Amino acid sequence: WKTDRKPGDEMRTAAALAAFALCAVAGMRKSAALRRRVEILGELRTMLRMFSIGIRCCALTLGELCEKADGRFGTLLHTAAENSADIHAAWDGACTEMRRIGCGAEETELIRSLGAKLGTSDCAGQEQLIEMHYERISALYEAVSADCAKKAKMFRSVGFLCGAGAAVMII
Image (cartoon, rainbow, N blue to C red; front, side):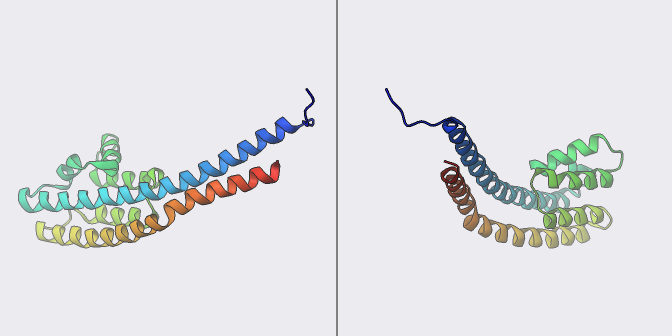
């Protein structure tokens, strides 16, 4: 059997497959990061609603609210609270970790500013503060959701197309 293979064909094929895979994975990761940010913003909105209800109905303190917090930020907050005696320091520590889990700078700073002010006024003042932050998080949620709807599929497609182009150029 005579083949048209030349020395190095296997290496070029392997390099082409690697380039395709790397580009495709990069596109999928960028798409997933957008979706994760939308999910986190949704969790933050829910948490703020629960905080508002807790303050209005039960006059919960910041510490009690933090104990009831759930979602990704709630998990970070619980972990930070275990290592900190002050709830405000724990909140700030959880905000610092938010960037690691996929939050954007804007929502991180919104939540950080909320934590710095929560628990420093009466129930009515805290409810107003939470409502103001809820509106800002909701607006951000809507903007990021719209952005995700437009760009998530595009990132995946561009990743696959770049990978295919790189593979063709290598081969």
